[in-house]
Image (cartoon, rainbow, N blue to C red; front, side, top):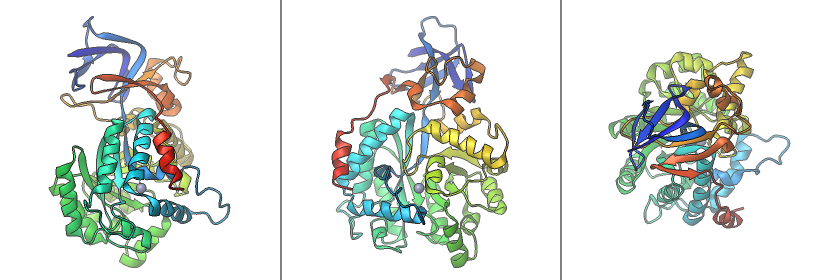
Length: 418
Ligand SMILES: [Zn+2]
């Protein structure tokens, strides 16, 4: 057993002094609490908080950074998607793994210690499965393991093709997709979840079946909900209802809705009743001009909160939570709309005795935090924090100083892609 005494530890949304974190040599948490043990290792000018959870990522989209920005008129989410699909057409397993390895390192360096990767490029260029239909998923998982990030791979369910590029995403039918998902879960050392892509890629019946199936198999279920008004209109024309309304009867507390941006009051009420989670991706939603979610209304209805780096145009959890709160202040013309402690609690790893916990060690002498009283530090972390406040990460019982990822593999993969 090893014991650490930083200046303070984040517990239940507040930084508390006089706390000792006890863990086994492999990082398994034993306890967090007040302790007078003088043998505890003191970490002066350091505070600890659990690592951030990146609840929505498409890791390969990191290569889009800086691209798709030149068009000055008529540029939309949909024109950006055309640029993104040109990258998809050129991705092969080796390049995907190189890009993912770099990008997961970048996430770790920024303070994400855990990622839920929404993985949808399954097959070869014509939609033909690789000899192992989970080849691409396994490359992403290998990259995550190399970077040392905890991962849940969400295998995407995509069953309807409107454009040639989407053939790479599409499985032959729902039974085959379930079978390949089960097979993947049995062959890899990370958690596997299921992700019906969106109401554009699956019918409401297929989404409902996926929600039931994932629950029966103890898996998380994630889905893009309503990122753009155009997909709301598509759903209204095709099904006579808005996207979330089409699956209202199937919603459950293990469902994570990504981009809950364009919801009606009724949909918000139903999402809250179901106890589902809304994953907001403020930097990507801002980059793509998606619009602002009704965050305060969702939280009041009982919806839980998560954040994601999504397109990875920005990989910085501090930027996500700051933008989340600032967007909401601008939308409601009020201040302190969401309690900063509850933002940190919602967007970081759970602290559970008996399980491995990844801790961020923040340097309180960093210019972003220096001089802030301990009882206000949680607000400063949410509104002023930056990745370079992180001195390092405690993971598996080891301290890993914050370091930049090596760009060499990434750059050679990129040369062949763009
Ligand atoms: Zn997404």
